[in-house]
Each structure stands twice: as C-alpha cells, then as structure tokens.
Image 1 (cartoon, one colour):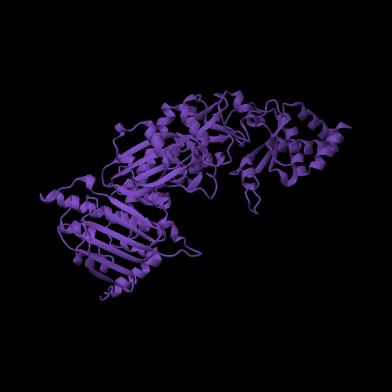
Image 2 (cartoon, one colour):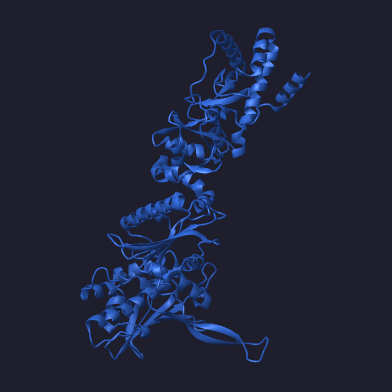
Amino acid sequence: MAKKQFKAESKRLLDLMINSIYTNKEIFLRELISNASDAIDKVYYRALTDENISFNKESYYIKVKPDKANRTLTISDTGIGMTKEELEDNLGVIARSGSLSFKKENEMAEDYDIIGQFGVGFYSAFMVADQVTVISKALGSDQAYKWESKGPDGYTIVPAEKDSIGTDIIVKIKASGEEENFDQYLDEYRLRFLIKKYSDFIRYPIKMDTTVSRLKEGSEDEYEHYTEEKTINSMVPIWRKNKNELSPEDYENFYMEKRFGFDKPLKYVHVSVAGAVSYNAILFIPEKIPYNYYTREYEKGLELYSNGVLIMNKCADLLPDYFGFVKGTVDSEDLSLNISREMLQHDRQLKIIAKNIKNKIKSELLAMLNNEREKYEKFYQSFGRQLKFGVYDNFGVDKGILQDLLMFYSSTEKKLVTLDEYIARMPEEQKFIYYASGESNERIAKMPQTELVAEKGYEILYLTDDVDEFALNILMNYKDKEFKSVSSGDLGIDTEETEPAKEKKEEELFTYMKEKLADKVKDVRASKRLKTHPVCLSNEGAISIEMEKVLNAMPTDQTIKADKVLEINTRHEVFNALIDALENNKEKLDLYTSLLYNQALLIEGLPLEDPVEFSNHICELMK
C-alpha cells in the first residue's frame, strides 16, 4: 500500500499548525465535533433539494467514544460521509475546506450556518494524536474508504468496511509525559466537561456511553455498574429560545450552570439583534462583588460563541473596564474568525457588538435606577466604585456615558443621591455643586470647612472613596454647574466684610504666623467659611488635601503636596488670644501657631510632622 505525500506547502502548514496555530490542545475535540455537525448539516441541505433523501433529525447524531485500553478516541457522525476523491481532496490538501466548497457548489445562502470553512480544524487532532484514522462512507455510495496518517510524512487511502453512512474519526492518543497529560482525553468525565464547555450548543445530539452505578437489588451496600448512552449537550442554547418561553428561574439556573458567580444575578438582560451584525446575548449583573474583583487575577469578559460553538471563554473586548462586572454570553453568526477559531481575524463586527452591549448595559442600569431604586442602590454598593473609576479612566473619554449613573451620599437627604437629583434641589442663587472629601460620612459631617455651606442651606455631597474626587475633577461640571470642594479657596458665597482697623491687625498677625510656619503652608488668612471652629486647612490649586493623602498612599517614591492655607476664625475667642500674644508675648504666639497648625492637620486626618513636639507644646500650655 503506497503512502501518499501531502503537497509541500500542505506539509509545512501541517507542521506549523501542530506546533503553532492552536495554542490550546483541548480544542481539537471542538473542531472534530464541529466538522461532524457540518457533515449532518450537508445531509439536511441535500434533503431540501432532493426528494429522494429524507431527513429525520432523530436519526442524526454525533458519538464520542473513548477506549482507554487501546488509547483511542473515536468521534462518529451519521452525516453525509466522504467518497475516496473527497477524502483525497479534503484531507490530502490542508486548508482546503469541504464545507466551504459545499456551500459554493450548492449555491447556499451566505447566512446558512456551516461551522467549518477553513479546512484545518481536522488537523488539530495531530496535536494529541500519534495517528489519525478516518473511515467514511458517503451518502449514495456502497463503498467505504479509510484515510490514515501519522502526521506530515503522508497518508494512505484504502477501501474499508462500514455498515452505515457517515464518518468515524479514530484518534490514537499520544502517551502522557512530564509536561503534557494526554490521558485526560480518554477520561469520560473530562470529555463530558470539554463537550459541555465548547460544543454544548451544537444542534445535534452528542452522545457518550456513561458509567452508571446503582445499588444491587436486595443489597444495602453493594453496587452494580453498567453503561448507558446519554446525550451530553443541551443543543438549543437559552439565548436562542423565545423570551416568552423562559422564566426568571431559567436565567438563574443558566447563571449557576455557567458558574458566573455563587450569588444570584441582580438583573438579567436577554438581547436579540438582527442587522448589519446579528447576535444574541444574555447579560447578567451580579448581586455581589467577586472576592478578587480588584486584583490582577480577575478576568473580565463575556463568553463568545460563533454559531453555538465556544470561541473565547473570556472575550475582554466585548466590555469596557467600567462594566467589567457584567457576566454573560454572546453568540453571533457574523464574526470573522482566523483559521484556528481561537481569536478573531479582525474586529469590525466585534466593535459593533461591543458598542451595542455597552449602550444596552447603560440603559438597563438607568432603568434600574429609575424604576427599582432599592435594587440599584444594592448594585451601586458593590460596583459604584468601578463606575467612578470609569469616569476617571482614559482622561474621562466615557464620562458622558457614566455621569448619570453616579451616586453620592447627601448631607441633607442622608442617603445616596444622583447628580440629577442634586441639581433639581439647588436653590436658584446657588452657583456650584458642593462636595466634601473624607474617610467616612460621620467624619465629613464634623469637618469645620462645611460650616458656611451648611449654614446657607446648600446640599453637600460626601465623597468617601479614594477615586471620588478624581472622578469629579474629570467631570468638571454637570449640567453646566461646576463642582466645588468645601475646602477650596473661594466658595463663591458672599460673606460680611471685615472692619478696616481689624484688617490691619489681621495682616500683621497672619504675616508673622506664615513666616513661622515657613514652607508648611502657602498662606495664613482669615476664614470666611468657619463659624464655630477656630481653625482649618483649605487648599489652592489642582491637588486637594484628600488627593494628597490618596496619592501619597500609592507605592511610589514621589511625595505629593497640596498647597495648604491655614485659615483662622476671626470671630473665635482663639483669635483674640492670638492678637494679645502678638502684642505682648511673641513666644506664646509661636506656641499658639504651632498648636493651631497641628490641630488643623489632625482635623484633616494628616500625620503630625513631629508628635513629640506637639505633646510638649500641650504640656507647656497646661503649665
């Protein structure tokens, strides 16, 4: 029996494919099952045009059979089969696609689904095989043929015996080594897992003989074992079913089956789109944040299918980072895949789908915010931080998409509110959206800097996440209202003028205190915002005091400093003590200046530069 040689370019391609094209060996099973599905599709299409061929779907199936003793894995189908010439053409010339040729020869519509169109998927079997044998009997033929190859060295084709129409692919599995476990492809449970993972939605039954154990009749502890043929795959994916047929429990069960999370989904979205790019999708918004969400280990992305065949387990390109918490599945017939079907050939279609999904998530979150407030607040407690990161990321390129979804705690409402709700309550004379930053709502409520704004009856948004102030700085304004920190130099609120005589004393005092504090503060001045507190720090410039704390907590060698201003309440008794010390006791003024500065640092939650000195100054004051 003469061995035939692959064509030179085919031989090189086979060697390249075995070693390079496919990065994940387990997908060989997906490829062989997809080819088997194609073979059955071809019978179905022939039946549409040939009245002599009947197509009873129950008679068509794919069978996967491992044989550990002989180290073989057989994938059989009841499809159209191949003649000797087709075996020669389809398997002897690599990258010649029988499926693609079938579509062209039969003038099939572009939108008719045949999975394999590249003609290389079959050869992925050589990644796990020492030898591949194909026994096939074509529809309308009395003679079967056997194609056999051990790889790039060539192949043989000889007549064979086969009772029924269809194809058997017998893969002789390689021996396991230190680096590769090939035994897994003979393990019943592993094979079932791979079928469910990659080929669960192939439209024909994929069958396996499954080992079943049961108690022997009349025995309490003795089991008998037998095999039972079972269909492994679901065949009809949930996203292709009519929404009216599905209950909330069906979606929740799908969520659990796919192991998208251990919680229940807070919301699910079923999408069916027909157009320039058609796709179906089921999206889930989880109830709880995954334990590793803010770590490098977390992978965002949706499952991506092409015609019901899993292409990517986590397609990150389908989701922007700020919606990375969304789980789910997308299936499209319009994706352009490369020859290994492991990644996309180009991403035009993917970008269209991703844009639509982004807009759909936004609209569903807005609907939840407006119609299911309690549920949205539950979502926001888990993932609001990620939305704010999205505003800040990429210099705010998507801030317009996210700004209506943001919520912050309100000083007046005592709950989370949206920016739109804040704007709706603003008095006509109020110029800015005021906010205050701090470690907690309780601490912010006690901040001296809030006194003037609160006295005017203006609402203050409390920012407690480290990303909050950065996000608002990127937003800059909302509906033409600028954001303003209660610690900023100018609050835009008119206050009483200071008496000229008093101003002169103030100027002398504050100049002296500024010299004593040297480079610690940019300025010392009379406060317009303080009412009952004696002192506080405010800031000037782009970097706030809260930003200083956040940036300096990062693992970098750079030290960031905000331009701080020490503000003194000239209506407070402390101010009178300062004036008296200025006129009568400069040493005491030095002591007061240091104490007030350190007091202002403590109020802000900033570390004291010299705690021992601060303690000594308190003791000196007590004497």
